[in-house]
Length: 286
Image 1: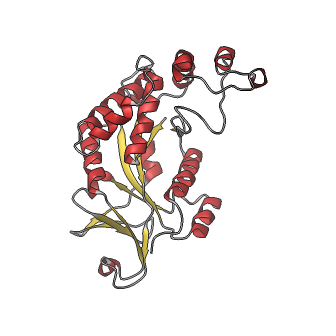
Image 2: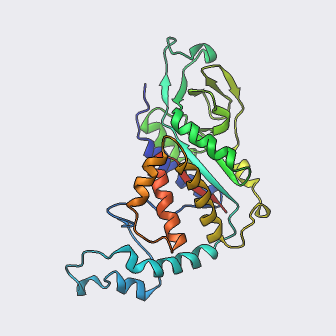
């Protein structure tokens, strides 16, 4: 039985709770209705930036937007100031959120490993191959995880959200521990999981404890903006060489605004393409 909630709902609840339990930087939000066309709200102290986008809007009743290139310099400047003013960034995180199936019948393929109802999710080979390539190229300052809840109904998930139990009720597995498997199974968040097809016990991971192990000493960049830019360059070079995702990444990059000289702004745009293409969420531990 497929869980009765959307994967995006779990992702949103998870991220909101994670933000309250550890220091995390969430990159710029979803790019919707055009490039960086925020559909909710925006904040900046720059009067020049607001003038460039047509504020106050009652002076421009037919204002149709502004080309990103016209405000890129202003955005790059203020993004850089805000990001460099944050605590020093420690590590990059890549999360793949999974909506599980809940298996309640003894005819389930993996029932014999648990002999009770259990959760499972599939591992997509093309995505796993890419995550393994990334894992092998980054020897430090990067954590790549699959995250999946112990919930099969939206009412259960909402209850866990209300009680701040989304993280404690989730199963976390590092991507490299699932290499060679096509499915992961689990019964409770606090227990091990069993990866299949060749059964392998995978010990539980304490996410919050693992995040706190990252140290500022691991960060060689003096500025946060350089931390982000350098990660984007390394990551995207790996994706570009990937046999499955590389061509699609190239097509998406061709459709980006020509703001290559604004490396921080461009990094956010490229990383949004990465998420749209692979389904993998990028976060930063600070």
